[in-house]
Image (cartoon, rainbow, N blue to C red; front, side, top):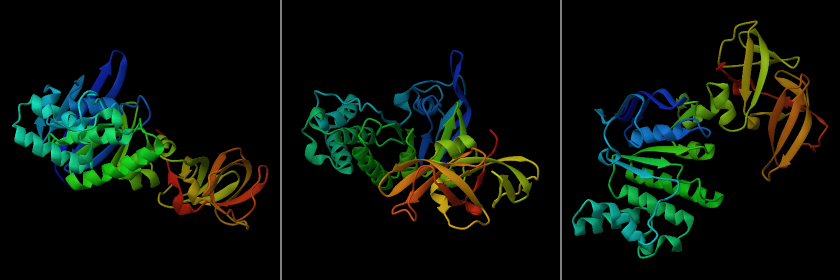
Length: 351
């Protein structure tokens, strides 16, 4: 296990009667890219602000490199911060924006010039050094903000939804830029986002937050393929959640059919919730093990695939991604026979 660079120990933050962060424990390791992911109001930005020092915890401690910095102001924590709004000075050039903080710290002119050049080269903006922010695209402005944060050579980089203001194409391009820069610099990074694709594509680990707590913490593949709770299964990607009753350690009755479920021993007679990703279901022609019939209610064509919404005999909803060209013609009202592979099921905890 690598060294913990940032630690939150029992951190709580209250705003009057509202608890934004609730007794949170979190360790971020050397060189790690950690994503704080969740819906609006889940506490992810407050958590970032606790690390940055923009707010103080109501209870608990914040440590950086093992040192308690709970009462230390932001500018003395050795952090770089990139905000969603960029916060660039419109009257200054790109180079002047990046150099501003170093000049405020009265650093030698030669050192400022060298650092600014290195930072702009890292984000591939050296040719734009003389331009003003208004002359740049949104993606370029975001790279200026990133260079300004990196020019300090911070111990930790904090990114507060930095891609949210960009359109889809720019966002995808900047996601690739961030991945490349992180690999090049190797800086410990905490990234706040509500975008699942960003978190899955960038992070070494994802902390999925809900109501001020971490619902699940782990690598992207684990979060996606093995969500620990119904909240995580619903929030990370599309999924179908089916309610049934266990009749054996590996069998669950759903909509009158029996599903064989792998990976976890079940208690016979217990109510069970199973999640399955829509890309794991397949259309089949014949009845058999782990096959259920469903009536099509909706079709959404998306080019590479069609999203099929269907209902089982007991009324439960099923979502299926059918690759194009579809193996059979699809129409609302028809009955499809669906194969649900046992190894693809996720048994959810009831919390």
